[in-house]
Length: 88
Image 1: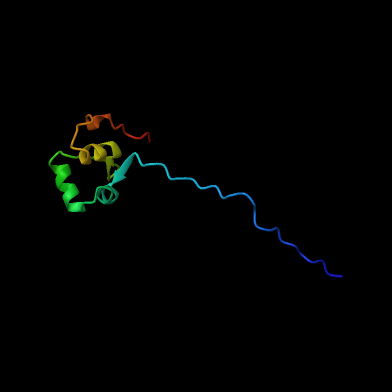
Image 2: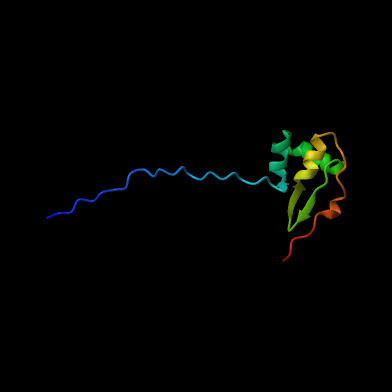
């Protein structure tokens, strides 16, 4: 005699959808895409001091608040020195 396997029907619970948290800093490509400009233009803005950037372990980061400040009229949000180095 063979037992017939029964499979549970579709779960009645709704799937849990989690939103990705907003980033606190962007890499160059992501920052350029976020504000709708090219990488070269972003590097020009960094060189001109209009958008502060921080290098850490060979990677360049731009804080999200600095991008928001730039696109909302260039308001100064404070010195870049407030961006702390990660613990190693």
